[in-house]
Amino acid sequence: MTESSSNTMWGGRFAQGPDAVMEAINASIDFDRRLYAQDIRGSRAHAAMLAAVGIISDSDFHSIEKGLLTVLSEIEQGTFSYSRELEDIHMNVEARLKEVIGAPAGRLHTARSRNDQVATDLRLWVRDQIDLALEGLATLQRALLAQAEAGADWVMPGFTHLQTAQPVTWGHHMLAYVEMFARDAGRLRDARARLNECPLGAAALAGTSFPIDREMTARELGFERPCANSLDAVSDRDFALEFLSAAAICAIHMSRLAEELVIWSSAQFRFVTLSDRFSTGSSIMPQKKNPDAAELLRAKTGRILGAAVALFTVMKGLPLAYSKDMQEDKEQVFDAADTLQLSLAAMAGMVADMSANRAALEEAASAGFSTATDLADWLVRTLGLPFREAHHVTGALVARAEEKGCDLPDLGLEEMQAEHPAITREVFDVLGVHNSVASRTSYGGTAPQQVRAQIARWKETLG
Ligand code: ARG
Image (cartoon, rainbow, N blue to C red; front, side, top):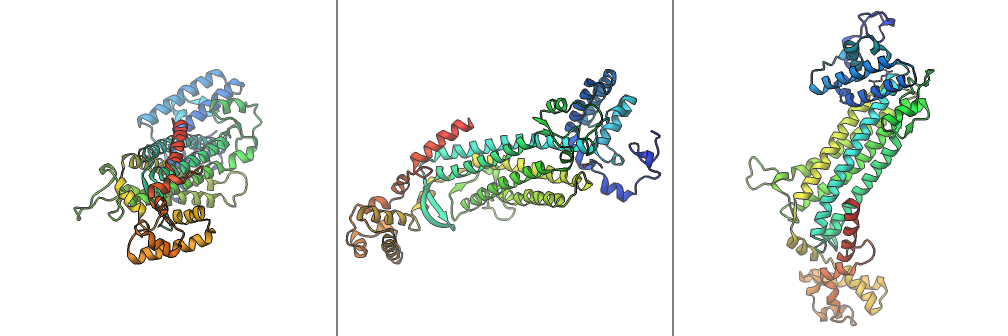
């Protein structure tokens, strides 16, 4: 090929170089340089395969292999100089390879295109991020599990509509999040299994006339198998969308927990004390200790969900196969992945460090007539009342207590009997919050015995 001043990769067809604005909108090297390790790994696998099937000579392969390792170490040592003119990481690496090893570098791109190259690189990158997120999730789950174990039988108010509903146990509440994060991990594992097919060898879109061995490159890169359709291989980013979707759902779970921590750490609740390590002070109000990490976690959700929405929007309506629109996938995926990993680490740290205030939890547990349902259930169970009637009698007793400004257990037996004459002293047994939670022994219920069984199960699962 004759080199022109336009472009070393496709200069043959071009008389002029790009306008500066064209270069600015077109170049992705400022962000896709993050794919360097995956790009070089993919190139090494591709070159090894080309040599194995006899498309390039062993000696060319060895100089390519050696040259790629040199480029890798230059990048890792920070001595590599990136060029915007060379657009992206793929062409930056290849151009440098040519400087380092000369002519054999020109053979690396045989039976390959940047289209299958970038699809491969990004799959490898997302796969690594999924593995990292799975570790982050397991650490977070262990922190929640430790909290659950410490307070398996501590009582606290359970809320619906953020109004006191029924007493629950602290351990039960912590385990609710362990379940959510387990499903997040499941979604990520599913996404990982589906993305683990190798696009390399799909070339630009149609496959190649060279006798390549796609099984070999797939195996070399840790993929289960090659993608079975070359058009699909280069033109879909559903693996990135699945990752972003799973990340967004996970972020939403973290945001809900973060919101609870913000509420619980307030002076009005005092359910938890966040550690100094995960709080900040105020520059003007000396008494303040703010749950900034929790607040930021709530907000980061918008960023991750935003990335998902952005890439969904990029992909909708794109005809097959590759379009440059897809270059916009990377910044979204990178930012969402970074944000997810940081959020998981911050949440795990905050949960591990926080201390729950057992006395405040217990005090709040009995407020707001939280055992009213227990009273109604008792009327059904012991006196044989239909539930609707029991609901009505209990409602009347709540109204009496409210009028007197006391809790349900503080009503006298005579007052109880004024609403239903058959009520006996035994009713007071079910009005205590400890009895209330202890009675909820149905599978998945809040009784300490159920909570302890779930803790044992999770300890086994999480190790
Ligand atoms: N930088 C490009 C991307 O991220 C690489 C693929 C370019 N392919 C092409 N036909 N222009 O998508």
